[in-house]
Length: 245
Image (cartoon, rainbow, N blue to C red; front, side, top):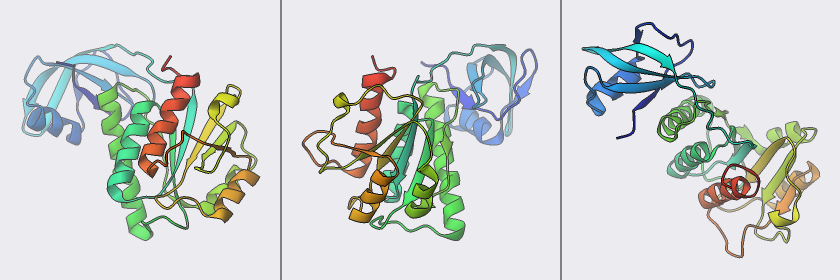
């Protein structure tokens, strides 16, 4: 069985007794049914990982001891920013989870003309926190010690205005594109991947993206669902230039 991992906000300290945060303690004792002397790992989301064992379980309290550094770098050499058009709740959750597992460093949801989901006010904040939780759980599972940044949704027009002068490589997946990634040089710096909603980008949105420096890319001969396109796009980047080879 793989040693359970739990996210614990910094700071973390070695050779001290440490109490798991409430949510992690509940998961350890009530869900995983861990016991005294079971080994666990904790990470702080900014690159540090410690190994220890459970020394106390009492009510909602789970305490660890004998904490030692065991940090391993599991980050991709590519700095991938996924810009995902808002889709239905289940699809967005799935994209956040898989993008985290595949190594995305930033995830920016955007509201497009054809997005089927519209978020405003309190719903925006709650949904962003929900996505953050999904990303944490994905890091716990896949071994990443650095949490990707999951931003609050932005209107497409507002977001695209901020990206025009950003350096690095920019790609937009469009079914009508003729260019493939094999024709592109190895990206330098940040790689921004733009994925449309269920109904695709409008002509105006695609035009604005190209004006902002995005290269239109075709990913195979088949029309992919929005959640499939995001996962396939990141996996392709990792295969060509990241840590899949």
